Structures are given as C-alpha cells and as structure tokens.
Amino acid sequence: MWDNHQMLNGVADGLYAVAALLAIYALIVTIIRLPVFPLREVEVIGVVAHTTRDQVLQIVGTELNGNFFTQDLERARLAFEKLPWVRHAQLRRQWPDRLYVEIEEHTAIARWGDTALIDGYGEMFAAATDQRLPVFIAPADSTAELVQRYSQFRAPLASVGRRIVEIKVSDRRAWQLTLDSGDVLELGREDMQERLQRYVGAYARTMARLPTRAYRVDLRYPSGFAVRARESTARARNGA
Image (cartoon, rainbow, N blue to C red; front, side, top):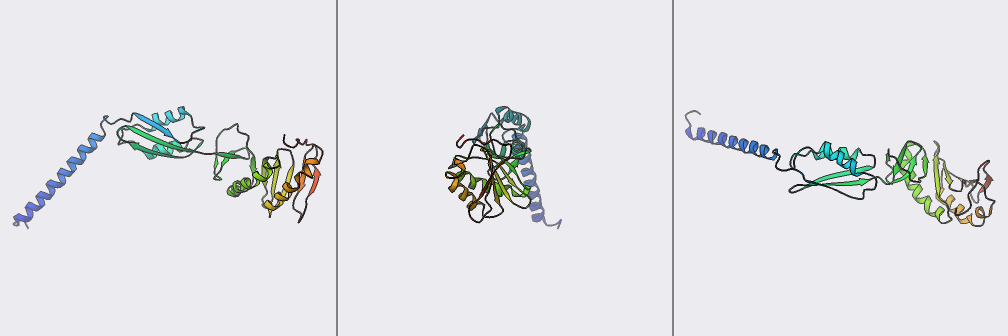
C-alpha cells in the first residue's frame, strides 16, 4: 500500500477535502453566530382576543435570545403554548430579520365545574374569564360528547327564548339541563334530542302558560312529560 503512490495521493486529496469542508463549516457556524443577523421585528398573527401584548413581549425577551439563524423556535413555541388562552402556536422566520408568531386561542364555550374552561374541541384549559358561560358537571371522559350535545341542544331551546346554564351528566350517563328560567329538564340516558324536541314543541302551549316559577320537567316518558314545581326557586319570565 505504501508503495502505491496513486493510492496515497488519493487518500491525501480526500483528507484535504474533508479538512476544507470542516473549515468551511466552522466558518459558516462562526458567521451565523455573530450578532449581525438580529431579529428586528416580531409580528403576531391570528385572532388574538385574550393573549396580551405584555405576555408576548415577555416571551420574546426571555426565549428569543439568538439571531435570525440561531433562534430556538421550538422552545419559543412551547413557551407561547403555556400561556393560558393559547391552544396552538407556530413560529416561522422571514428573511432578513422578521419572525412571525401565529397564535390560535381557545374559544371557551363552558366552564368545567369551578376548575377549568372547555373549548369547542372539548379540550380543558385553565384561564380566567368574566364571560357568562354554562357549567358542565360530568365524568372527565365525557367532554367531547358534552360539547357535541351542547351544540345540538342550544338551537332548539333558543327558538323558545331559553338558554342552558348548566348541563349535568351522572356517572350512569343520565343527562340533566338547567335553563336560565330555573327549569330543570330530566332527559335521561337515551333519545335526549328527541325528548328535548318534544319539550320545545309543546313549550308555547304548556310551559309558557304556567305561573312564573321554576319547574322540574321529566321528559323520560315515552310520550309527553311530567311537570312539577321546584321548591324555593323563582322562575324567570319567558324571554327574560
């Protein structure tokens, strides 16, 4: 081998090439780490209703410490997603000095007891709000169905001027709605939508004509429903 000058020259050329590539790589790394490619603009895009400017600036100041090339965007993304209202964040660079932060916020549709909020995807998150939201009380594995059922129940009740203030699901999966009138609707464990439609269809000629107080309405009968007054509970007038 050592007498093969052609092979030795080839090995030497290969080593020179590797050394040259390593030198170029080291030079590139050194250049991109120089403070000559600073990020000058950070733009937040998306419908942002709850995430504040101060929260964004705090993350920009603490998590975005490098230049255009060396920013740890994944670390910054995770920091944004720890903010109370942020469901998803995506960061991307634009040459030469801009960073876009796209934020998708949770849209709260209900309260989960008194511990959390629920968004339209059935995801729970912890955040403060003064929104008037219905309360869900149910087994923890039922959030997706709650969101779906709530969406189905709202429109029929709105057609008679009523609004859901609480949905309660028992461990046996029996459903109970409390309305803004104070009325409690017992829907049971099956055919909930049909039972609610029966209530709505009869509302004008039954519930709307009753004295102004709160009622418990049992809709678990094959046809029709039973109504009895709730004790010590005032009922709001229809449309109030």
